Length: 387
Image 1 (tube, helix red, strand yellow):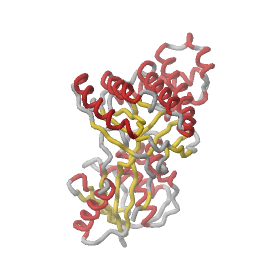
Image 2 (cartoon, helix red, strand yellow; image 1 turned 60 degrees about the vertical axis):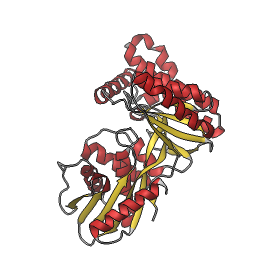
Image 3 (cartoon, rainbow, N blue to C red; image 1 turned 90 degrees about the vertical axis):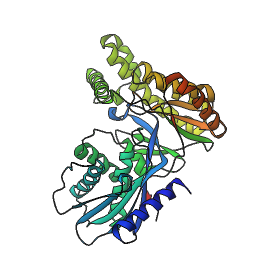
Image 4 (spheres, helix red, strand yellow; image 1 turned 135 degrees about the horizontal axis):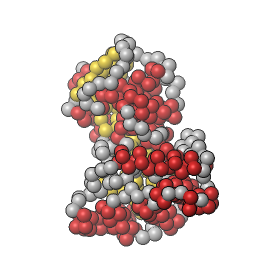
């Protein structure tokens, strides 16, 4: 049985037990991993994530009143109830409730009209691994109301609504990447996102490549304070050059003024400017099936995060080195996500997946004292109806 079918069966059983009826609708929204383009999103740059086949699944039926009854299978089948006729406020309980409330409140504020619903949902996106379990929930809920009530709601707007809910209701200042690839991903493809215009382009992945995600299980520390510091340094650099964002800054312009910038500000800017170029070159490499070029670009991205942006850790660097020694130039590997722990992502040919797993199992814990989690993924379709 597929992972998706296990989720569908679990949410359907829970829905029927909680609401004494069968659901009318089944939808899914995937998690994501970013292949390349780190800390470029809030600098209006380019990112290249793909949706992965770990996802959130929801089943639902309409109601005739304004009541939302929603059940989280993953939180002991807890059922939360509220009315959309009332002002929807932040709830002091399990945090999942506020993602639900936020998405629905933002949809209503955008002028969409709908009645109540009974909903049950579950997800298998690993939480806390930086693979966007929260974005998958936001997007799957938007998809539920689009499908249940035939709302004239584009996939991009589902993503923007989810981001708004997270920014303004939940209170996390995320960019648009996670929600957009969850809503608009295409099976077998990565998604190039221009974070300035929100234009997207599907980029075909070579069929022989697996998306391997390895969680270092290094507890992510410093993320908030260091993230804010890096963001300020990027804004400082853009301001120095009179640019709205580092997206507008060329490498030549940056290098010409190196001596006038503080060293850490220069290095942050250099990471972002060179990373944007690497994203666009990676698109070309993927489309041409040029694994040697892709290997080099992902290695350069990791080195830039380590040496210029300074967001890797010794454990993450060790994990990247172990994988790199196994795959050579036949695939790419780098840290992915905000930094200071979390996951690495590797694009690995079919015949090297098990050797990579074995090399990591043999060396990572011995070197770091930590035990990894290993996920083999495929690039899957974005959110949509599955029943």
